[in-house]
Length: 382
Length: 248
Image (cartoon, rainbow over all chains, first blue to last red; front, side, top):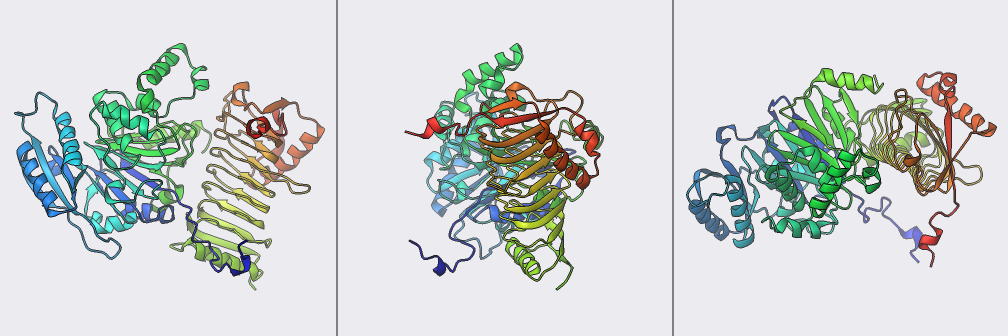
């Protein structure tokens, strides 16, 4: 038996009790803002992560190159870089390439080289594929066939910044205070089951879709095999990757609205379906038959983003936290309310959504403060 | 020894903040005002003195965890795990609370003015004179009173419109002790398989009168007005609902 009197670690630091941290902030009126508040907010949830992964996605990032695919690529060797640059020259028109600016800080050790390329798809050689399909195939080609290279961001007018470290350290390393966007998501990682490496940090991305995630996707194997049929290859060694490909498939390729896509990822329980109207029952049963393999099993909260839209979603029995805040036209999503309050103490409204219910911020339907007051009054909270 | 101590929480790590609270409580301070609190965890943990802690801001997860005696008043919302395994004392929240409010509580009282998240009162328990009591002014999300083994859970639904149902499904799933009192509309399908519905008896009304009275006092409501409406009592049908499931 352990001799209790000899325990000198009063706080029991040897047992790590963590969870990932998520934060999202979007001005639905389209105003671009610096990352200062986002970095401050995610840093406030420092204890949720353990320094093995941090990252950010920023939208509205490259107005000057808005129509070009912005590839962000990690290289583990100069040879990898040379091979990829040859490949890109063959497959794309490359009007501009640059090393992603970084500043050396002690906390970030052994980082890969990170480069950014603005790419244009040339019509010859695409085999009548759409540009997006062509780009996805090239990303998969690099990630599965070229050694020492990973494309971790491939959308237009947006970028992902991520690596091994606490999120506030990653922000400092990538000089994120210098960037502006109208939508930011952020993640602090506590890896479960899979390694903490640069490619495994969140957000995960394909085209302009990004996902940050807290939880565990225990249906990863089923989801992965289903997505492979559509040409998505999982290479990042962690469960969250399937969510990025799933939303690309459901919302971009199959054109499902977010409300329906949410019912695929977090479907209502059968007992709930039985209480729905016949028309709704038909929709929910059809979705479960067609997309059963994309159901995300296990506990999760995700913040999904793409150009013009930010979506918060939890599993249907809410095994991971999510708080929503609204101030004027700005929508906040966070693992903890305190992180939102730190950067916006006087929210118009803060609430905890129901499990499986998507919370959507959209440039197409900017939040109007007046409408929220009405909602507030209706609920009797004023 | 000071009667009132003010602590500014801005930028202070939770361990340091809790150490300051411990120091103040052990010095016999009667009241502590905590300002600029943004997510520091475990506030009030390990405190066994009858000190009053008034919090301005948003305290972090596991507020009042293992607390034994103090009274915490929050001017704002509470996050997840508030009142975790609390032994005695009071937590009064002038706002809403997150998920798993009062989980595994063994005693004490928690008052929440507005809504609560998922699994409020999960696995609360009671033994002899120790009995946790949770009183919620608004509505609750799913799995209210899950695996509840003792104590009292009251859901008032004060922000529901006429005829509007409570939000929660799976109420009292796995419940095997204690009682849940609900004011406002709730339908059969919202209840877990392990609870029964009963009319209130005289003793139930005495309990409600006392606790709703305290709730009304804390938040400025009229208790009689609240008590005019019909309440439903939920009770556990079985002592060991999963006894046959896990025993071989």
